[in-house]
Length: 298
Image 1 (cartoon, rainbow, N blue to C red):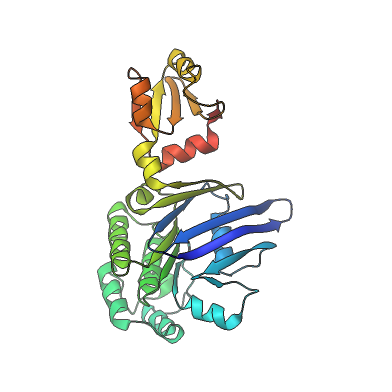
Image 2: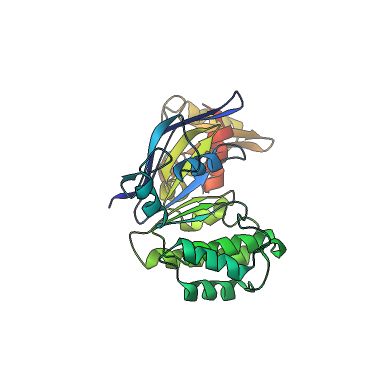
């Protein structure tokens, strides 16, 4: 399949404080790409760049195979925007608008708008049509955005912390809705940034991590959660692993604790065969990210 979104070599400098540095990101059709990183790492800036909400100093963005952004053809960009559903990390709708008015505005903006779907989503989320946007909690504001994003049948969803502010039950409900959205058309795709990496464990196909404005890893989710592992070593055991020759120089990342040393290994099954006396657990996305970003390199 083709790519729903392709960003290549994005660079953007903000004085001496922060810059995007050669950021490349691909969301293939039919996939969910999780986008992770610490606060201030560049997730929202990258999302704004790929959505054409800011000019970059260099680099290019294609959406559905067409050039996209402030410097691309305006007619093409308008057509492409109709196929993208967006949820920002804060609710962007004017506070004095009612929920029903938000729906009317969206209907005017999107020819594919489905008022019946919007009504169904509002009922599912328990959002009254007469409520003012400013009266909604952070979580309910996120739910309103999700209802809007799903109600015009987009081919690509771009979600910036869409599950932030939701309780675990509501998050699972949103993930079920996203699965249903994907199942309805195999060409649909999602780019989803989140600090709640357990949500990405459940739905992502790939995980991309950004740190200080640069991509530090882009991995298949199964390679992280099903294949990689965290070896729980004592100091002597860690020295034995490091000196065994089983791993190349600077391949291992580790974190030292009072009770031992955690070691990120690329294949826990291979590790278990070579070192059967050392416990090795499955890695989570959070484990993997923490050790890649903060682990000591050995």
